[in-house]
Image (cartoon, rainbow, N blue to C red; front, side, top):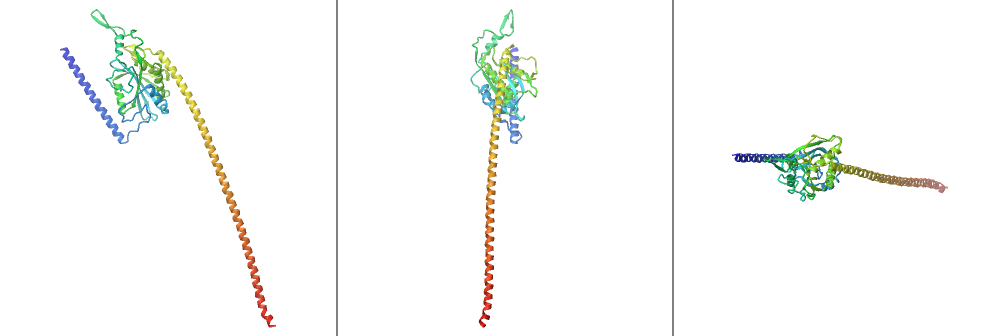
Length: 393
């Protein structure tokens, strides 16, 4: 009878889960439809062209990267990431299985009109970076090795007719050979996009066990966050079942953010983050090392930016001097052109003056000749008039 009741309950639960899945699928399709309609009507702004953070609203799948190429190729080389600010940090723990832990960040665009969802996590599968971390069917954080941790951390002991669990402790029976290359993964998409909905589904399947808030004056940028994630991955690039696994990675980054940024406060004083089956994973030393390396990198980046600014100022000064030289040369050429034009105008005026003088002289000579001709005509007329009277005599 109990068995039949148990089967009935399982069937009912399965039916509810299928109904919830259908509802979620329908809601997701409706959201995509309305987003597409708004885009057609021109009511949705274009997403920021910042690769490695923001996706187009119609993109179906988030961006998946390993931390190192993501940071070196997309974040470090893009100056816009200095203006993308981290608004929210959440530490998540999955509800079942090995209770995988990951970090969720919300990062605003430079114009504050868009938000990026970014998930950072460590996996031990090593290999295929392009698998979908949003897939709830995948075995997270292990190649069946966490089952070993489960059996060794919480062994069951027989005590008479009852069975009790011992206090959880990490077993020393796991040798240091239980390690392999860590697969530190970044998943990101624009909040409100189809791809962003997939990341939100991943977060809904987990529990947000702690959040970190920052003051307005001391919030990390996407560039600073990328630096911290990269340095944490480089600090311990090897996945170790008992120490440097997903719990260590998430807790180290979360605590380092709390340490490095002024007035950063978690909303929960004590939380189960950074614990493997109830056992706290040591992170004090790694947080100290990461913070030290981050400060060194920050100082080096600051010096690098100062050098770049100095070099930019030098180039600007040289360009300004060259431009000023070109302007002065152009002004000198213009002055010389004006002076040459004035000289040509003056020479032409002098030539015209000489021409006027020559013309006046010619006119004067012509007038004198005319007067001379007039006198001669008058003289001739006088002579002719006098000739008859002379002949009569």
